[in-house]
Amino acid sequence: MIALDDIDRALLRALVRDAAQSASALGRDLGLSQPATWRRIKRLEAGGVITGRRLRLNAEALGFGVTVFLGIKLATRGRVSLEDFERAVSAIPEVQTVEHVLGLFDYRLRVVARDLPDFERVLRRRIMTLPGAGEVEANVLLSEERLPGPL
Amino acid sequence: MLDDLDRRILRYWQAEPSLAPGELAERCNITAGKAARRIARLQDLGIVQGSGVVIDWAALGYALEVSLRVTLDKTQANAFDTFMAEARLVPEVIEIQTFLGRVDLRLSIIARDMGHYQQIYRSRILTLPHIAEIEALMHVARIKTQEGLPL
Image (cartoon, rainbow over all chains, first blue to last red):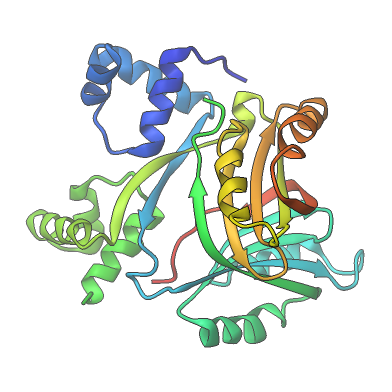
């Protein structure tokens, strides 16, 4: 685990907003030289704090009007292989994220679809047929905001 | 509006958001100039909204992530707005989503350990306005995280 100072925190906040900024532009805002900024970014990457980038695409403009979160309970616990389930569910293109959770459900999926009939198709043909899939709860996403977190 | 080349660019780009425009052009087998024009157009159309780095909170000592599924007391006017405005003020809340379905809202919160989580839960979450019911899901593992669109 690596410790952050105030400049690291400001740097992370700026990079979460826009990862494409150059080290010199970032440095200017933070009162750092380009090499000093670059060294800090490298340190955050090497320390595993920055794990990569994510492209922000407008899903709706690309024809994906519906995002649904599914809670899935495995039907026969112990007898299904978690690896088989995870491999099969991760291979579905419409499934954007898969999280193994503890509580009411075993897995939480984020699923994107063109519209509700398209979502129903994905649910019936691809998700309900997964090895071990049991009870499923669906919640349609209305709005989403990501916050900077404790930085 | 978009043709096959636009989709090809987006497929490569979302898989590797750190690619420079020149590398992206190479992957797509087109000239750098053509790629630059297409990229600029995708940005102008608001299809590509930018990119941000992904932070691994565990590397910063936040070992726990919990999803809190919240049902609100909808007899209260503005229950959603007041709840969300207050939830945004909790630094450990990193995501707020609203839903149509069995739950109204989901908060993603991070904590250093169980003790820290309990402290946030008691002093910052249970004190949020208009909560009718809360359920917690503890994150065990992320299996698929890319959040790509099936383009």
